[in-house]
Image (cartoon, rainbow, N blue to C red; front, side, top):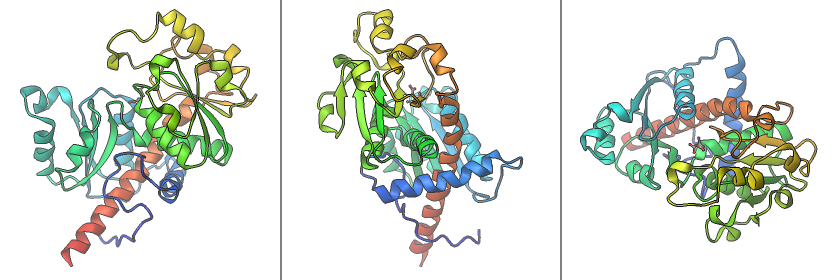
Length: 323
Ligand code: ASP
């Protein structure tokens, strides 16, 4: 293609996590994402930015919204998008994650979008391939595009991230969404509070530049944003709380607990939400406060921006190597 890619402020080959990214890099990713929101609201949602490029969505863990979002993002940029579901892949025949990745690598994809059950697996895979890799969630480690779409949602609603009081509530221990959000929001100057029972908080969390609370009303007081997390039952071994009923009583978001946050505080959830467990159904569906649908919309724009930036970085790298 005749594109002559300029060096962008985000110059990495991959997007494996938010940890370590600078304010400038995050701001650039958000700026580019914001540009795609308009395109997605038009009748004609397609441009040819990634015409001729191949994107493979390689998901070793279940996903509906993230996989669909990446697929749509790639198609809106005119890339060829292939979805590899675990069920039909050779992984079930004993082939390892790395073997699968190198087989796919031999087909010259431009971007591999990978979700894996093990923390660190996507990083490992990225070291074995020649293309760009986007982490679409690895174990309880990171989910960078989720944090970017959350930040874009907040920024578009509030005009900034800096100085906002943001409470991240629930199963922080098992949540890659929480980790990526904490890195991003702390870097961008938000005042982050973690609200969780002792058992669902990683040790050392108080050293992450956040405030820690074990009581919802104390943690939500005067908050601008209330971000709820799903209880990650699939990652739990043992008992972390006495019962779902008791968990909802103390940590489920209902109007009563929400009443101490700012009157216009926004409610967020990365989905899928366990209604009646970490969030009351009425609160989740209260679209005067809940921006859950907007988070999904922003997800497509963020993924378009990431695919666009990484594909062009790769092209630039290849051009430089050929000189
Ligand atoms: N969809 C998000 C993730 O993949 C959040 C969740 O599953 O609770 O991490």
